[in-house]
Image (tube, rainbow, N blue to C red; front, top):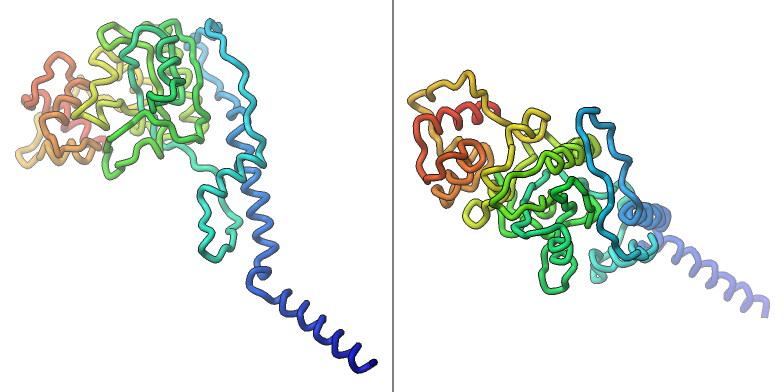
Length: 307
């Protein structure tokens, strides 16, 4: 009887030792760290964004709310973490959770105009099931800023697009829609609110100056927003996007290749005519023909050297 007892005890201790050494428990401690960190990351997504950076006093922003929205109860961090993990984690593979990670941050800002007639109309468009389109921010003509997506989430605003080697701009960018039908000037109140917002985004996420671009830049064959009336020069003077030196343009050298220059800046030149028009809509404005004049090439050469 005693021998049987010791035999059973030996078997039990052996089983415990085997389980303790099993690969599935080898990383139990770090897997727990992963799970806790995933919950923290998920909690970031459902919490308010970082406090806006301080903006220079001369920028006036209209902050009165004129549109009322229903209160939406966000999912808990645990619910969000569970949903994200279930969607992105393979169950047919061995699992060991890395412990160093955080949320992805935007590196580009894409500016659009809504091509609609009111802020309310655009908000409705972004909240209808069948439209399949969204942006992170919408700015009204009066300067009201409405946020519609957390900065860390992937919006559906860029569509089929390309900038440099990037073919999925939605995954690396924030989309900002300006309430404008595409045929009207952009009011000062709206541009001031935009600059205020861009200042915050640039400081919060360390977005490079050259990475503030327009929808037509990344989709020249199918988009023309923001329109030729958009004040890119004003934005560039505040550090959002680039502009050429109008007072010191020089004739490009004989070996200057304008197609390569457009490509180096970021334009998709597979449809060269469309790329030229997009470039001219932004920097030339008064001539939208798909050919580059000597003046156009001088502007392009100046911008190319900034890259």
